[in-house]
Amino acid sequence: MTDSFRRWNRSLLVVFGVFVIVFLIGPSIVIVPMGFTAGQSLSFPPVGFSLNWYGKMLSDPAWTSGFINSFQVAVCTAVVASVLGTMTALGIARGRFPGKTIANALILSPLVVPVIVIGIGMFSFFVRFKLSGTLVGMVIAHTALSVPYVVVSVSTSLRSMDRNLEMAAANLGANPWRTFRRITLPLIMPGVFAGALFAFLESWDEVVVSIFMTTTKFRTLPVVMWEQVRQVVDPTVAAVATVLLATTTTVLTLALVVRRQTPVR
Amino acid sequence: MSAPVAVKEGAGRVMRGPLISRWGALAVPLLLFLTFAFLVPMFLIVVRSVTDPVNIGMGNYVTFFTTEANMRVLGNTFYIATVCTVACLAIGYPYAYLMSIVPQRVAGIMLVFVLVPFWSSLLVRTFAWEVILRDTGLINTLLLNLKVISEPLPLIRNTFSVILGMSQILLPFMVLPLYSVMQKIDPELTRAAANLGAPPFSAFRRVFVPLSFPGITAGCLLVFVLALGFYITPTILGSARETMISRFIADQVQVRVNWGLASAMAVVLMVLTFVVLAVASRFVKLRDVYGALGEG
Image 1: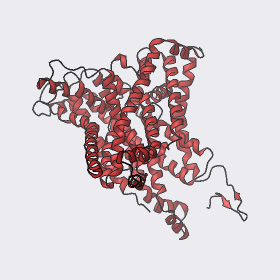
Image 2: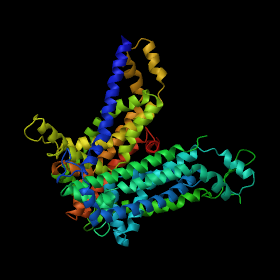
Image 3: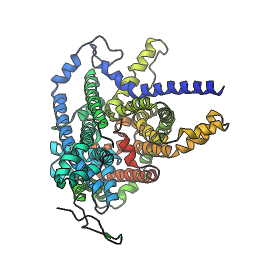
Image 4: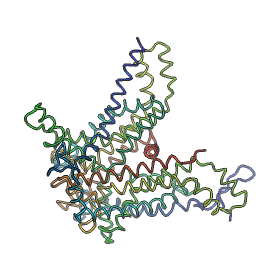
């Protein structure tokens, strides 16, 4: 009696779980076929199959320059954020400095302060240095937003690392720099690399701060898409959305695979 | 080249080295960077809220809190954030519970289905809902073709579509803290309750649910606080009636060029955020929640 009740209950839960998964990823998947429509409008089901809208995307300088700008910003952000973030994770884990708790809070705060506040704040500050609408300005803004992910990722690697290996190296006569370069860095590298990929993703998809930090001369892909979505929506937007999704999924898969490589004690 | 870090002396006394140790110095560049790129801009908003357009002190705050239309925006924001939180808990709790009882490998796959949407573009996910909900969208076309309805249903530009889209986007922030707490609950406890004669549901309700309480609190507070600051989703899926604080701030800056009022509102939003987070931090480490986003 109780057993059949429990089994029934559990299958109900499994059905619910499947529904949740459909709810989470279904809507995004719906977009993909719509970019390949041969029809003139963004309707479902798509009519036939064509690459017209991808062609239109590639011939429109707003989209192509947006794509190039986004890629540049995301790559630079990943590099800067992973260098600064790794140094900081090491500093927090190994070092001593006053106000460590406050430092931790400061590093995580860009994740929770509403993006609109960060957006208008950064704009009104950076515009004074003529940094709004520039690659440098965008990289600074996105680095602040994505560096927490690097710090968290590298810190996790550092915690799971066996410090006896460092001591062994030091005992065998390696100086601190050599120990770091030959022992510590290789061991935390999966965490650093995953952090860099997360930073890339954060920058690649970021909209709100970018809306304020870009100008018509320098816009990233999500900003161009945002402006399109608010006006006329044609299947080109679905094509662009598909490109964004495909990039995200690829980079995330890579990040999760890399993350698994972390040597555990 | 030995750095003078804390050196233990004979009687267990700790001798302190310099204020910042050699390792600690590594954190300085980022802290300086964040001070200039993040803290100063935030501080500037606080300053602007009391000095823009002229030195008017608390004038912008008074204007905001005494205008009825503005207070409606604030009320809307709280209402939408609250409903989203409840919806996320109702959907996320059973899902996280399922994750905690299935084999590790299955739970890992279920986790990926939470992480992929988390990292996917918020704009793309919002756009997806527009494509599904609008008059010529997936649902309405389907129902019209099946002759279930003769007129498209008003599924978009209303509170319903805003809450639906936001709940879907915020769901990972509910599932992750819930799962991290549930994972640590000893399954023997509910089994013991059942062995002592408790009916299955009662064992779940009296033993499991109370133990998952820290996860519930953390998830709810996190979803609530993030929902308060939503901009893209309510703007695309909602009408002017569903304006939330963030859209209000953006409009003040972009359309009205009223930086003073916008900054005052931004400060109110920031303060609300910090109050909720201060409560949340008593139940869960924020770091753990975000740390879970990179696991898999």
